[in-house]
Image (cartoon, rainbow, N blue to C red; front, side, top):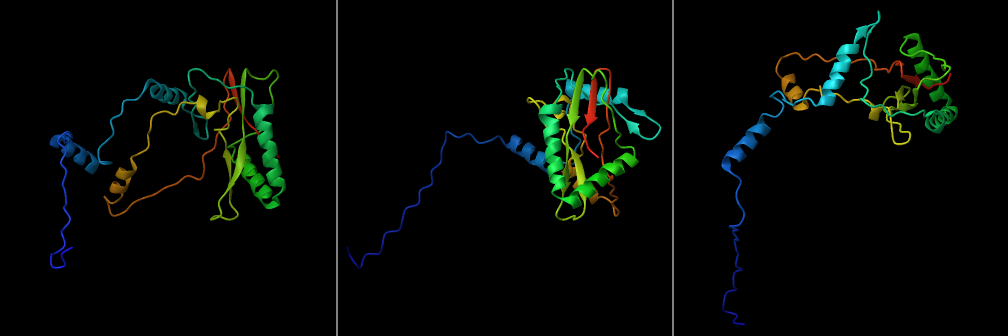
Amino acid sequence: MNANKPPRQPFIYHVCRKDIEEEPLDELVQRFWKIEAEGTLPEQNEDSSLDQLAVQTMENSICHNGERYQIGFPWKPVKKLQNNYFSAAVSQLKSLQKRLQNDPGLNQRYNQTLQTDLDKNFVKPVEMQAPPPELIWYLPHHAVTNPNKPGKVRRVANAASKFRGKSLNSNLLTGPDLLNNLVGVLLRFRQHKVAVLSDIEGIFMQIAKDKKTSLLFVSFG
């Protein structure tokens, strides 16, 4: 090696591939403006036949019972529910009872949620019919607590509980998505000087009955 010869500089290669086609400019611009307009334009999605059926069920069954408005369940055209009492509902109820027996404080607060709903007529006791309905489904429930809200307990109805691969949720139509786009909500939130927020205390599932179906809420005193 010649000590007086300067070191060689590394070569840098730029490889251009001609076999890759560039995206057309008009499509790039359209995609750019679509992203920029996200949440500001109304969505135009055509409702499916099942979504239309769910809306029709709501419109045909809505009524005022003297205290509040109520609507029927948006059942799918073919209901596939079997009696889940012994194999699913009872076992989940026993698990809940065991949990409450091991936590007297939780047990007291949980029973208070039941009593509050009874006092407000959100739920009501029912008796087994003789003979039982053709289709019957027991809806398990459980306690949910939040460490950030000590002393508060919510009773949640588990409509996703499955029996033989089926649940109450899987037999109900979801209906069209009526929620506002979150991006649009945030943008409109800054549109005026004053913004108003509201909330509801709770949503409760009533006992529903028709000629062929009964939905019973399993609970204990």
